[in-house]
Image (cartoon, rainbow, N blue to C red; front, side, top):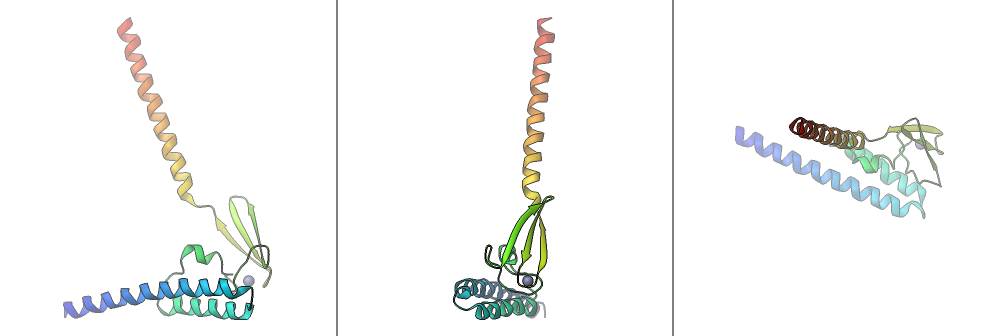
Length: 139
Ligand SMILES: [Zn+2]
């Protein structure tokens, strides 16, 4: 019984991985066919979305930004989309459906900066301690 369950689980993971691969490929095809045929690229993106819903797989983050959240069309900066930065957010304005998408800046960078900052303070503290000892010894 357990064997059967685990085998089923492995199969599920395989299917999900394949689905993500397919989604990546569909996005690639959509990008390539955008200039020639916009409708085709829209259909490809719709297919990709359907795949992600069917297999309960998230669309990769980099690709999510290319697709409009509201009309599921491919966003090409300078053609049918406008990108602005305001108040710590990147704002995508879709010219097809006239709606906004907002993404906050990634928090990873902030964390990195704070870690470096803490290290810097620690080094200063340690130096100060040594200096203090040195002065104490001199006295
Ligand atoms: Zn849109």
